[in-house]
Length: 408
Ligand SMILES: [Zn+2]
Image 1 (cartoon, rainbow, N blue to C red):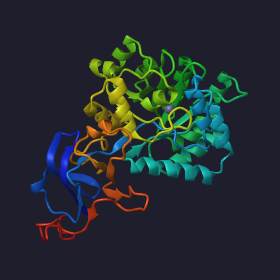
Image 2 (image 1 turned 30 degrees about the vertical axis):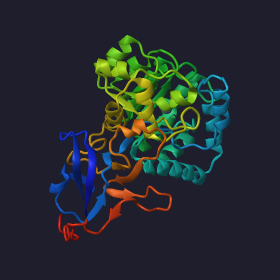
Image 3 (image 1 turned 135 degrees about the horizontal axis):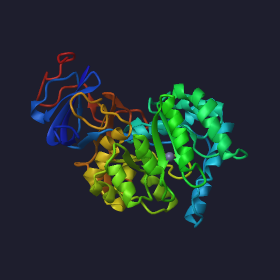
């Protein structure tokens, strides 16, 4: 099956072809097979008219906590009224999640996953971390694995009430890791005052690596500390948050293969100072943007919001922010098949109801996603299940240009 996306006003590929105007793109068997000038496109079985809108790679959200139960809207309201964020509310979600049935957790996950996909997120990482016991963590990873291959074991999210930190680290690196590892690709730890210190974080990540998982870390979110240095020391794919960085942290990231993943939804929702993306970019670090979607500190699935915040609050250009939300996220997940629209990439793309990618930041809060392709297949973006802009009919003026099966 082939599919032509035609009449593209601006096509951002993040590949060798860069950005094209008056462009078209052909998908064959779920991957990008051709990009170029609109008039020169080969025929295809189906056609999507982009209506002169911009086409961008699907968003890669490399940091979410999407499986949970409960609601912390009251905590948010209290914070907006002046109470500080400490991370302690995680235990509230742990209690609600433990009390929920599999069916309830699956329904909530599906709702948020669909919400993200409709907004253009075509690759998503999902962490555990609200079980905090062996069976609970395995349950969350199994459910996460039903929607994504990018699953992360975050048993070391916070020390559960009534347990000593040393005792809990032993559990996380012992029985819990052994049970969780078959269901996870990544291992993560919340390295922060009140959660796990640098030595404990190193112990958790090294144990995960020994079990075949790849390391990533929550680092330097609420305070300066050694989390980013640890990420670089261990060759982690990503250090996430990076809100409180020293000059040596920035230099270490810039000289490493570790991506700095910034999560501005957390600063927005906790009314905290934003990380300095411009300083990281100036130093040469690779920067990703992700939502950190979770019920406590960043309950958003909107990558477009993260782009707008990156531009407005963190010193990124719109093009840098878009790259970070797509190709940057892919780098943070060590993926080269997503986050770009070069030939051979997975055909994950977003047609915007806007003439250029600039509108993602220029028109914050406006639903600009018109059509989403995931693995080359249009996904419903409207609540009635319809897919905007799709047709199997030939375009006007080019009769017979798209006979079924003619281009294989
Ligand atoms: Zn997080």
